[in-house]
Length: 86
Image (cartoon, rainbow, N blue to C red):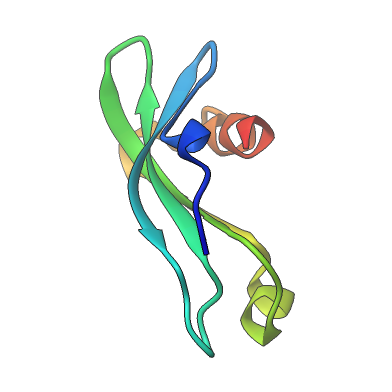
């Protein structure tokens, strides 16, 4: 699989996603992009998001987007903004 290089940095008004890893997958893991989530106003990492490309049993159960927002930043709607950016 070839990953699109246009997605190394995805910048929005509030948040920026910076690519930290890609995985081509195997017979159990589908390919994915893995990003750190930055809050633009403080240039600090506030969490991570993975975007899985394709379909398998795991994605059927867990979906194609997984994210985590660090505890001090929860409750501000950043996960919603992040998912809408991707």
